[in-house]
Length: 52
Image 1 (tube, helix red, strand yellow):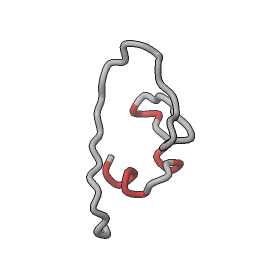
Image 2 (cartoon, rainbow, N blue to C red):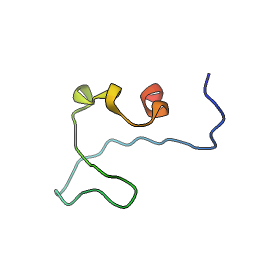
Image 3 (cartoon, rainbow, N blue to C red):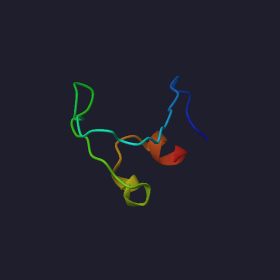
Image 4 (spheres, rainbow, N blue to C red):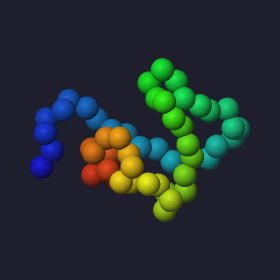
């Protein structure tokens, strides 16, 4: 079903204790969503869409 990509995706849910977050050199955009509002069809990596 999935190609061999040698990567493991780990997803976490957590309570945010402050609003100190933002993009880094590995991401161009950072945004918070409620789970039901995540725009799955707009995510960059197909593997993430398939594993939610």
